Length: 228
Image (cartoon, rainbow, N blue to C red; front, side, top):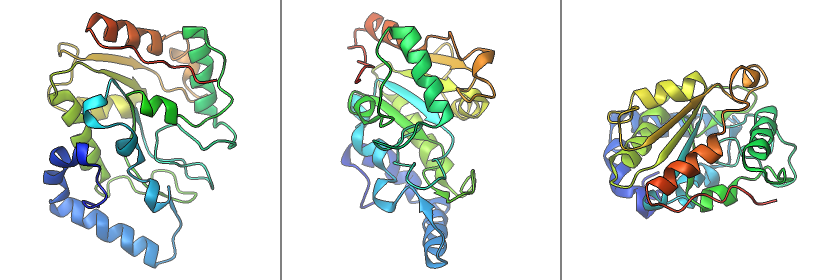
């Protein structure tokens, strides 16, 4: 895993990758593969969020829980699916809020790569999952690595926005020292975009325009959220 780590993230993450917990994660993933288990996303996509959004370019962090566990969905970016794959319910609701918030045309593609390339770190708490088994790789070691990713963004001098949808993302952020409402960063909290909770405060929360307003106040370029 260290060899595959993008250079911009290497110094921040190498200490945690040297821990026994990280080595156990590597052993677990090899054992799963040897047992014939299907793991999503494919091996070459697991660090995709870090590859597309270098540490020094992060403007916004959107935290997810774990990858989609259906065939052909997971691509290494939280909430994103490849071109041509039907949009999962949470992603459909994200796009509904995007249209209402920013007045853009609803994207036809669920591939969020353009956001990642514009400084939006689309990071899941766990970067792998067993096919058909939601949350199956939670507690296996990914959390410490992705905590270190969040901490690396918090530690930079440049202000960033953390968009925290749902209790899982919010509890993860609370574990990271220095990320709170009094920090130099902007923290935007709302219910998750899942159909189970979107109507309890996600819709109308305006995370995209609020993120850009903060970035502009901080002297940073806003994110272009549109790619229809």
